[in-house]
Image (cartoon, rainbow, N blue to C red; front, side, top):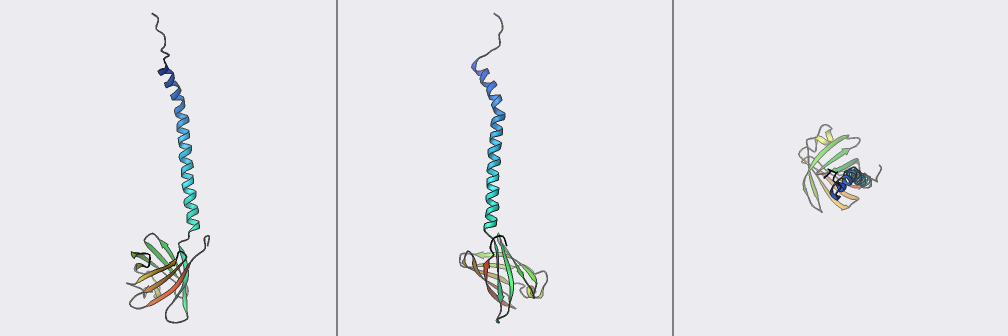
Length: 154
């Protein structure tokens, strides 16, 4: 008997599958790339559509106030107090529920207005997704104001 190469269906199937492996790998990579691009574009669109920046005027007991921006971050907020007081407050979430969220003010880094809020808190009362009341409280001062969400792209 002469030795002839084995051409059984198993040998033919393995030859076909070795040719399909690169094509299957490329198809899988293409789908993974499309999926990642879809997730990335969704995340980018969501961040533009939903601004976490609110602006408003803080008042004490008089008609004069100071414009302030509040930027909400996960479990934190940053309040930028504009002229004439010019300072920035960082605060971390202590308690949050649908009616009020309390943030403890971290030690300020300059600015007399912010220094007066040492050991204070910021209490946020949401009225809607676009409107909140903010109270800046400490032993030395008590300011509050109405804040509105900035339009996307601002």
